Length: 113
Image (cartoon, rainbow, N blue to C red; front, side, top):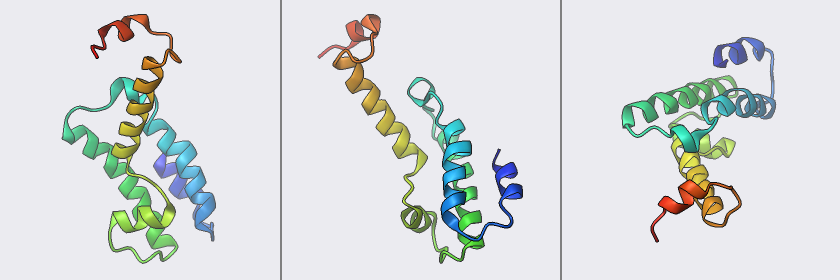
């Protein structure tokens, strides 16, 4: 999907539409159901982060964002690292289970507080 995005946006002159397409087409796939499958090993988490870094590198070069590090480009584009977003979604899911916003009595019974 990222390759498709690169090929389809060659003529773009603004970073905002590219960022919106990345967030909806690529990042949506990378984060789908992340509270269920959040990678435990760093090697798997790093593999996912590399995809976002590749997209950030492309955007930084294409629009001369002053690429010095991935964190700088993430800040410039107002994007969080994928690992932070997965942690955030895990926390939100846990909160919803505790407050019965998600109906999962089996999971709620396994939480020992």
